[in-house]
Image (tube, rainbow, N blue to C red):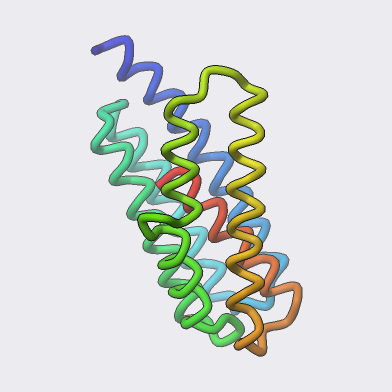
Length: 160
């Protein structure tokens, strides 16, 4: 268990750094306010601190990523350039029992090769993009903000 926790600790910290950097870049590319961008940056700082504190304990690592997703989602929902209904609808759909995230998690947990994992990820990405496009018709968000919000939803759902 100690070795598992050590490996989980290192990989979760690396994943946290990568996901946070990508989410922050997407936020910068959007029309979100500076306050929202700062809230997302703060969520990333909290994520990395929580992952270091978790020392690889699975439940704590999962909780850290879930909290990060909630903080980022709240920042997006509260931003005037992003419509809260869009964020909630896309997250609800992809996290449903038949949603893209459930399918992704079930497929990735049984994956034994990198090629299959890449295919599973590509399918997840495509499914979330499709869900986003279905929900985008009812919004007035700019295409840049819509793309950034969709990518942030994808990134935050990968680890939580």
